[in-house]
Amino acid sequence: MGSQSKYKEKELVSVRMIVPTAAAPPAAATPGLIYCFWTNIPNSDRAELGHTPVADPRNPDAGSVLGATYPKPPRAGKRYLGTPRFTSSFCDKSRIRALKLAGWRISKNSSLPKLQTEALTPNSFVRTVYVTIKAIKYAWNIPLVTLNHIKAAVPNGGGGITIPNIKEATASDYDELCIGANAPKPPRASFVMAHPLSSDPATIQTFFDPDRTLVNPWQPTKSGVYAFA
Image (cartoon, rainbow, N blue to C red; front, side, top):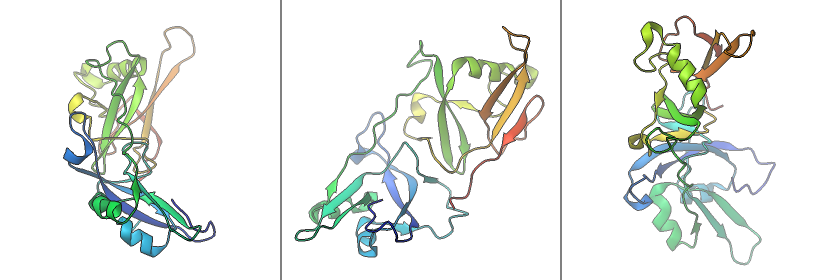
């Protein structure tokens, strides 16, 4: 982010951010996630932007997320007069006012994604769901037909998606969801079912809550990603 030299080794750093809610602008929202990313901008700029080195990339603090599509913190950019030097990188929520006074230009936060729920988008063919991992509500949009197959696969008739503990997002989750993160990323599981239109079986796959123990017919297919390096 804002590299001054492509040959300089990058370091994993973090900033805290304010996540805008559906009902409140960024200034009125509450502190959200710890956003982690790799950078090699000068140390003086890192200090001004509020970058904090990640002490242990293999075991980051709970609530930390690496490279999410949403939410993202604002970016700050500054061109130094009389030189070709330009720096641009993410900034900590606590530094925004001081950065503006120092001549940095601050970008807007990333746009709020459209939540796909039965109440908000009843005609949609997808639903927004999530599992909680490392204090993160890891969210994604799942085809409605797949979601229905998952519900039907719940032992004892279901009554909710208890295995693999996927939860359908609601409007109250709007400001807590994390979409497209590189890490942490939950593990994946699958089960095989009879295909309604073919003699060949169909495989249904999804993320699942790593704190839950999978039961038949679920089988693990891919490990989760927890380390940032």
